[in-house]
Image: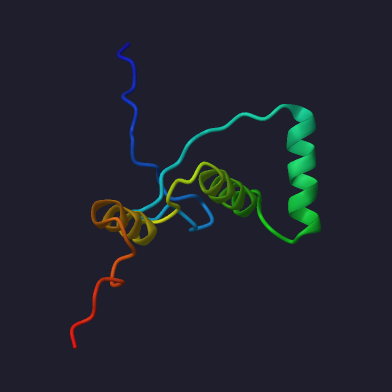
Length: 93
């Protein structure tokens, strides 16, 4: 029997909340203790585990001086090329 092919596009979940075209999914495993701690934190803060993960990954990117979004990445790229903040050049009089 042929092996089923993996579909790289995730189907929308039963609740109707599916991934938008800009989202990527990755399965991450947690040990039991960490999962319980995250789940408890999510409930205590009235957040989802997804929201906690989003916050954690944004913080990790900032810690390593990596851009979090496209706008920031473009701004930093322009600054690297010119050596200064975009729009901070000499003004004409």
